Length: 276
Image (spheres, rainbow, N blue to C red):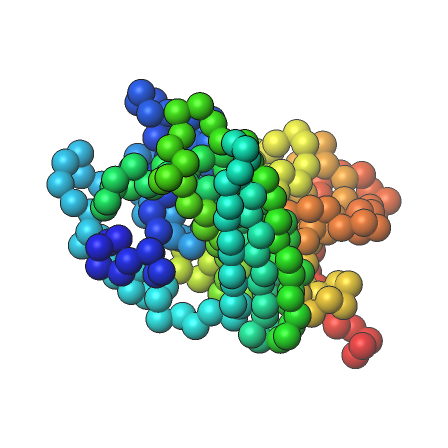
C-alpha cells in the first residue's frame, strides 16, 4: 500500500503486541481502540478491520477501504516541520480550515522508517495532541511540541506526521444495551459504516446493570448534538438524566433526577419544544 500511494497519501504506523518488538506506545493504542483481535488495522483513526491471514498479504482487503477514504475531500490543510538538535526532536506546524469542520482530535507522531518499504515504527506517541479548534473556513491553529530522541533510535530515519482523528460528515449513531439485568449501562458511538467512534464509550451509571436509554440533541446551542442518557429499569436506579459531549465528557449542569420516585430508571429524548 505504501508503494501504491506513497507517503503523501498513505502512512502505515505499526504497533507490536506480545512480540519482542512490543512497546508502551502499542499498549496505549491497543487500549484506546479496544482491540479484540490481531491483526487490527485502523484507518483514519476510526474505521477498523479486524483479523487477517497468519501469512500472506492483506492488500486486497485493505485496498477498497483506502480507496474509499481517498475519495473524501479534506476540510483542512496542514503543514508540519521537524528538526533535531542536541538529542531533542522539535515539531512545528499549522492547520487551516478550508470549510466547516466537525470537532475532532489532532495528533503529531514521530516515527522511524528503518528501511525502504518497511512499516514505520511509531516513537513516543504522541508528541502533540489537542482538540481541533480551527472549525470554520479561514481559521488556523498552530502546532508545536518536543520529544527526546530515545536510545537506539536512528535520527536519520526519524520523520513526523500530523493526522486528524475523525474527519468526516460528523454523523454518529449512539447505541445502548437493552434493559436486561445482566446488560452493561454503556453508551457507545458508531459511524455509519459501523466503525467505532473511539471517544464515545460512556459508562453512564453504576452498578453496571439493566442497560441504558440514549438520545441525542443539541441542548447547548453549539450546532452539534449532545448525548443524553437514562438508566434502565432496575430497582437500584433513580430517574437520573445525564448529558455528554461528542468527546464522551459529561456536560456541566446536565445531571438531574426527573421524578421523585427513586426507582426503575427513566427514558430520555430530545426535542425543540419552544422553537428556539
